[in-house]
Every structure is written in structure tokens, then in C-alpha cells.
Amino acid sequence: MLDDLRQRMRALERPATLEGSVAVLPLGVSEVDAALGGGLARGALHEIAAVSEAHLPAATGFVAGVAKQSLCSALCRAMDGRDKPGHDGGKAIVWLAEDMGAAESGALYGPGVDGCGIPPERLFTVSVAHRRDLLWALEEALRCCSVSVVIGEIRAGALDGVAVRRLSLAAADSGSLALLLRAAPPEDASAAATRWIVGAASSRGEDPHFTARLVRNRRGPLGSWILTWSDDDGFAAHAQPLAAPLGDRPHRAVA
Image 1 (cartoon, rainbow, N blue to C red):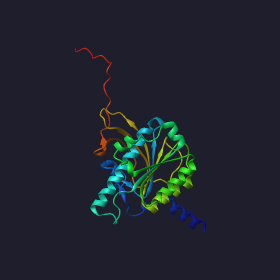
Image 2: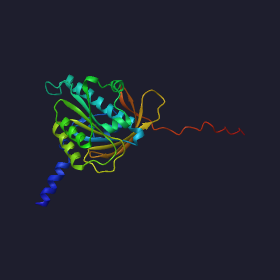
Image 3: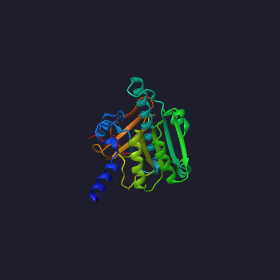
Image 4: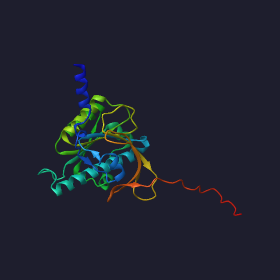
């Protein structure tokens, strides 16, 4: 009986969408998509953590880019007739955050979100007072058929493992993309399909650059990349930076 219970628990901890054929969301970067087995698994939970709280804006931008990619993918599928009738790519994005997070780091900036390519009419923001309310609202949003992406902004601290598994199961049941945005790299174990550590990278142009480390991947290898985001083209790989010469070092005399 105990062996049977252990097998049942292992089956519950592994999202159903990770078995066999998996619907994926390509990020548009061949190296990253190859490591992910085609892209981020839909119907699954993914964690994106900032390198530190100072890098939370970069991690937030990364999450917004993923959400925008999902909207574009849904619209393309609807136009190509690959989705069921009535699925016009017009599903909503739900972004939930704790009150304390908004007080410490600020709330989402509307024009900035719009600049990322997320239409304001598709985005619903929810603010809650307690962590338990946030986890409950995340699960409820994932079970809503009118929602395609659910984002939960979590402050520092460990998460209840049971609650995380419930979120994974809710995402698997609905086929929605569940993203946990965390203010610092977590140390707790997770039932998420992937876990990312994202920070800001140096940029000489107008497009933001990210350091993206894939530190957990149930479907393939791990990796580290420097990505750039463009409102028109989405994510793209950026060459690893080379060490720049010191500007204050005098040139050696020519012999």
C-alpha cells in the first residue's frame, strides 16, 4: 500500500503536460528553445527569480516579454485555425502581487507594460494582503478558461510545497502558462517545470539586455544566456561580452 501511495504522489508531482507530446511556447531564440525542448511548456508552472531585489525590474521585464510572446502565439494559432472555434487569441493575462511588494518596489507601470506589447485591455492586475490569498487567487485564475497566462509576484521567503504542487496541477488541467516571479533566488525545492535566475546586463543601445540562467529544467539541459528584448522582434540572443580595455591605462612606449 505504501509503494502504491508513493507512485501516486510521484504522478501528482509531475504535471500531466510533461508526459508525451507537450504544447510549448517558443521564446524565439534557437539556443534557448533547444534546451527547453521547443520552448516553455504550456500547462505548467515556471519560476523566474531575480538575481537580487535590485534586479527585480529586469526579471519583471523578462516575465512581461514571455507574456507578450504568449499573446502573439495565441493570435497566430487563431489566425491559422489551429485553435478550437471561439479561441481568438483574446484571452487575458492575470498579474497578482502582494501589497508589500508594491509598497517596496512599486506597482506595474501602465505605459511600460503597453510598450512591451501587452494591450491594457488584456491585462488584469490583482493586489492581495497575504501570501495565502495570493496562492489561492493564482490557483483560481489558472482554472479560468478565459485566462492564458497567470503571473504571481512573490516576495522573498519559501513557498508551501503543497501550494506549489496545486498550482502545477491547476496549470496542467487548464493548459495555461503559470509564472512565479520571485524577488530573490529561492532555496526551496519546487515542482515547477523550469526555474530561471534573471538579472540586468549591460546595454549600449535602447533595447534592454538580460542575463538568463536556466537552473532547473525537467525536459532538458541547463544553460546561461544573455538575451535582448525588442518590442518589435521579441527575444534575441546577444553575444557574450568581451573584456573591454581599461580606459585609464597609459599606452606603452613604442620601442
